[in-house]
Length: 261
Ligand code: DGL
Image 1 (cartoon, rainbow, N blue to C red):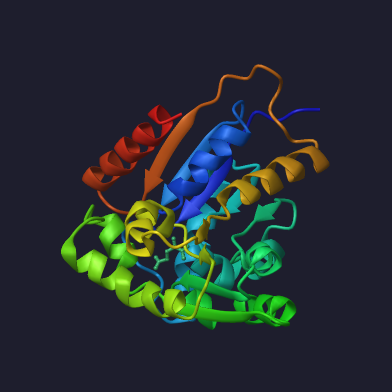
Image 2: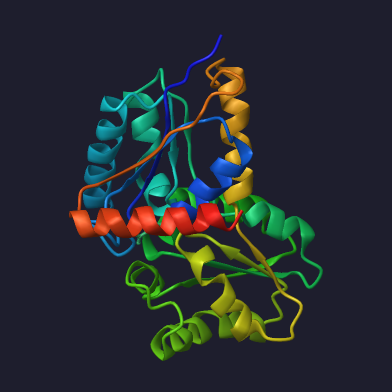
């Protein structure tokens, strides 16, 4: 059995393209439809009820466009709304973003790990539970990446202001001896180079959960027998609730990522 319908990928904005890229690599025959809200981004500082409404609207749109599996490529949206979405659409498999506390906690040598995420993601039950589960003997230092999402959305990744914000968020983790820093928001991998500059010579690994999420999506396609047929030529489409110029920017960014391969 096979299903050539697209996988839906959703984020508040452009950040989820870091997951889109991993999905494209892991599943080269699968069509992807990427929905970037764009109109209501960033989600991270909004009340949970408001984020839940935006997520619901977005998922409705992906279902309407026939998504066979949905990747919620946003830690904030996952934390706030994925369980409700699973209940509302029981026949569609969902994959969410989990802060990669587990791989960081299991591999740290210094016993200290850092987690960068949005305020809403850090406040969610998912984060609290994951931390409780893996925190034995491990010091977890979490920090909100203030202004990080906006910097990526506006293409200001290397501004002085962005670098200053990165130093402020990452500095305490480095001072405490963290040797793993989890990128707990899908926008943050687009700041990996700048974060690495701040880390400098120290031996610190940045952990991006996107490849693991793509592997999970691949596994679910297999379990549900809904993978595309062998040799299927994939289609990549992009949708937004913002305007045409935003759509053009997402498409350009995605094409740049595709060329990197
Ligand atoms: N990419 C979203 C995440 O992973 C960003 C959230 C936001 O819009 O603030 O959390």
